[in-house]
Image 1 (cartoon, helix red, strand yellow):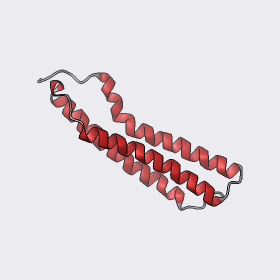
Image 2 (image 1 turned 30 degrees about the vertical axis):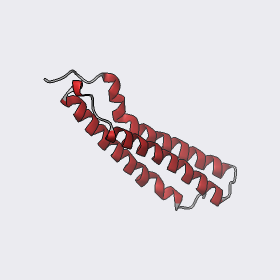
Image 3 (image 1 turned 135 degrees about the vertical axis):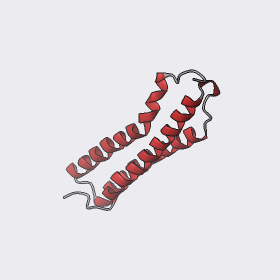
Image 4 (image 1 turned 180 degrees about the vertical axis):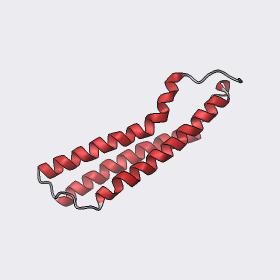
Length: 112
């Protein structure tokens, strides 16, 4: 084995994108429920949901750009390169999942 093992504290990066996705799920649906319960106008509710979704997409995209351009530590060897590659692709998957999951909520009827 060349290099040292990757520290376990770096493994949280594998879940970072989907943790932001989970945050989007909770915040968007809570905001939707609050908006419907208090009778917000459809336009205001839709704009609020769009802003929250956009902020979450920006966070995932920023993490993706930051980690995709970072160089893995050479002393950690191939394990660091592999981990960084997997993390970058996990962030891409989280970005796509966020768009596919939450974008339709912006075009559907807001409150029934």
